[in-house]
Image (cartoon, rainbow, N blue to C red):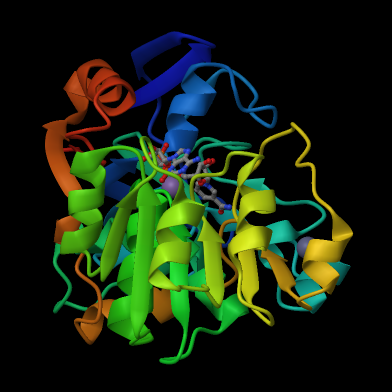
Length: 339
Ligand code: NAI
Ligand code: MN
Ligand code: ZN
């Protein structure tokens, strides 16, 4: 089989490898579609401190089970599945409180262990989630990015009364906008970014108000309109954003952080405690695959609004280059793995 391998930072190759045999409790997935995510690019460029090389990247993938290991029902062969990349131990403290996404022995497919940019991948059977026939392939491959939004909203619990502010109209901001509007019916969702084309995508994803903060201050625009956000999600993830978010927030607001910067955010406690703000952080997803599959079945979200490119996996270098260099026109890039 062919696999897309990062041999070492900045060296991407399509390598011939043996087709994996599913171990006990695993299934083998014949991959049909996979999505490129910022973290794939980070591993490619050597910017992910958790990554070990060589690595088959890819943690957003969909396919069909074509073999099962011992202890797995052979009736699953032929099943269409999306794969949750989060592999957890099931018994540590975070696992025991429903946060397998921060398991003390967390393994993420495509990061710590070989992932889905491959013609076949062996994965734990319980990570392979059944996709109903009513959900088309290119929606099924988008389950994982939407689980990031499901994890954010699962913690912040949006209501229809919220006035939400989303920083960043990249893939992560856009899935969050769709969840807030389509699932939670939030009254007003505001998106701030610096790229007009991305803001236009946010509008298509349901944003009620878009603000370009490249030439004007976000604070000035919100002040002028008398808007005090009650829920703020940082899907742009610059360390300077937290302080601004605290300043902009309504008293009693919630702020959700998604960033992994190792640079400090400088922040005064008074701003947080004075308004009794709640800070959440959100990493990957905690058992959110069934939640998003349900959203898709009910038509509450529309992955098509994020997909800008579908390319053959053999063109992965070109796909990566577009993804990295053209934020104006590129959002989600899917790779097809044909027969
Ligand atoms: P992206 O880079 O495609 O999008 C970020 C957007 O934020 C860009 O459109 C950029 O123009 C905008 N932006 C940057 N600074 C800004 C500022 N100060 N004000 C307004 N807009 C600003 O990235 P993507 O894929 O959407 O991911 C966003 C972030 O989320 C990344 O930092 C990534 O590491 C993080 N992430 C976190 C996950 C989690 O589970 N916590 C999962 C996936 C991504
Ligand atoms: Mn992803
Ligand atoms: Zn655990």
